[in-house]
Image (cartoon, rainbow, N blue to C red; front, side, top):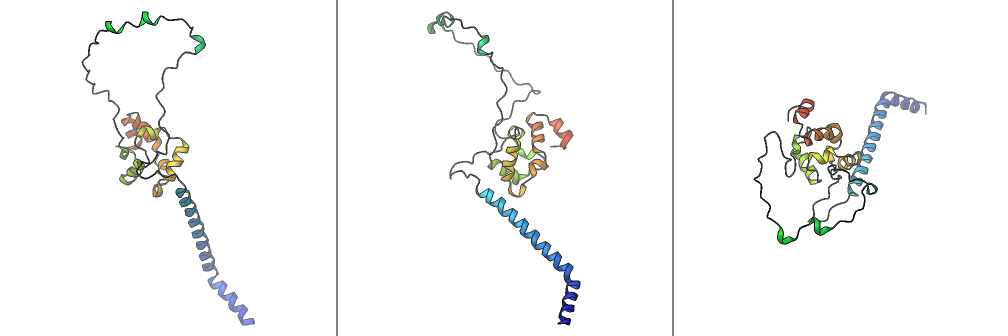
Length: 192
């Protein structure tokens, strides 16, 4: 019995550190795999669009442009109006003169029609661009208007690209590009 105890002590002295390292590796792997399984289950619970319909965008649409606020109802007096005095009869209408279109000056650029080129954002490559379009993200204005909840919703759907919106500062980049401030963008993030 004595030689067995000494043999065990010798074994643990010689190999104990390696056994402890192996045990820590196994525990770490189990922890990582359980975290990945939870993330995969969360992706499975995400709503899926029916076949034949494009997926609904995960972000809220950009806010409408601010308009002049109407005066409060209490400040506007109620005055009866004679509609016939204001609106002439239809027979007396004169055709409006058609004004020639004014060519746009090169200094003023109209907003582009259709989706923006999201590849201009630093950290967005072709695969990530395709994934963003699939998720309904197509313009810099959308990204610039993201809230923390929007970022979390998009980030959960990015798969291998998780963490990129925050790490690459997409919202800040998109604010520059949505405003057309290419010089400001390039000063902070480099050439497009």
